[in-house]
Image (cartoon, rainbow, N blue to C red):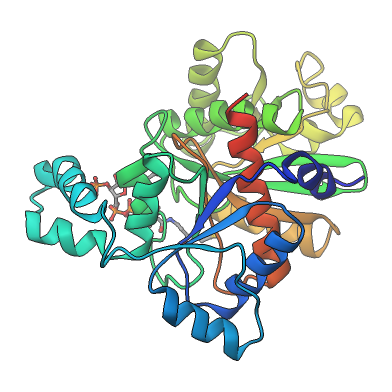
Length: 324
Ligand SMILES: CC(C)(COP(=O)(O)OP(=O)(O)OC[C@H]1O[C@@H](n2cnc3c(N)ncnc32)[C@H](O)[C@@H]1OP(=O)(O)O)[C@@H](O)C(=O)NCCC(=O)NCCS
């Protein structure tokens, strides 16, 4: 059974409510129909039910089992606006602006999640820029920063790659946090974390400020979680190949068996996951958000119906596991 089938088995029939902020998108509605049909979650939408139903009808999509809330009339909109004003007033927002913001589906959806009306949120499909902001502002982070990861799958192999989608140029502190957060995310996937802090250098083989950044990050992460199996700075081959590890860093705790790869910046991370996917034959699931108080995931505008179903299932699974 592959990992997605396992997730579906775990969430099936649990009635986990997942809110979609992109209510008028045919692909989202089609994915929601499939989610209902397979009893994988309860799709929740934010917007005008009539408009949604019209689009669904035109595309022969059955909306039975969908829940819809319209911020223009909802009993909670006023309360949510007041709350949003409180959260953002230090940043100079006015009450009027807070009210306007609450009419936006992604912000209202984030409020529904904050108040446990739903257990997870999927957004970003129709958003050209910064789809993460409602989650950052309203849901909040567990630590200093949220980050993202990809679940990389090929046959029996599973890796977590981070950060390949969110933090562009992390400082050493941020890189350490990315490593610790990803190690904690690994538990969701029953992976015993072995974290490689990747660089073009292994243990001082090269000297450069970019290498120092990774080395310092490794030291910070080790200090914060001394029992974590983590090594860095380390090259990719020494991180994943035991025979190379023996030569380059024989005392490495990873012994060439890293399963979490932390990249020094978004250039490296984004290029690496695409290469593993396109040249290495891995399936890349993500980017998935981590480090937020509650499960939120974004998807790209190119996401297929099956991608949307997968992201919704992963979000529901994170909500289900998080409650245990
Ligand atoms: C996500 C992203 C847009 C944030 O950029 P930014 O310049 O920090 O954005 P802003 O400064 O406008 O930040 C907006 C708010 O989000 C917060 N924020 C930004 N990144 C955050 C993070 N990783 N975790 C938590 N909050 C974050 C900021 O602190 C800010 O909060 P504030 O409004 O209370 O001050 C940026 O990191 C980005 O573009 N990342 C790359 C995404 C991308 O292109 N990926 C492509 C590959 S998939």
